[in-house]
Image (cartoon, rainbow, N blue to C red):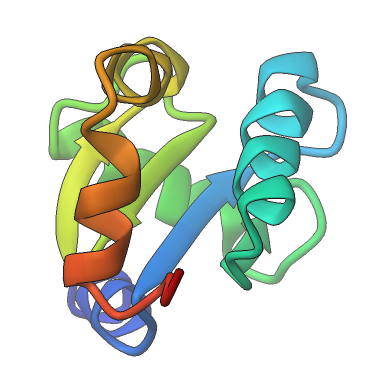
Length: 102
């Protein structure tokens, strides 16, 4: 859990993902299209990915990918991110976190 907290707090936008997940791809594309440079951890490629996935589950993340943190705070998965985007709350959140300047 300490490792997870360190990963989350190091960058303004952190995405936990799997290459095999189409929703992960969609969320990563959304942030990149905004001009955000998220830190992306592919849990199916990194050491201790399964352990990190279990820690995300303990935080209440279900499903465990994609999971997005902005400014060190859990935003949630694809549904939560898309809801924020559709109600125009995502961009202001990214600006407050220093991930987006325009």
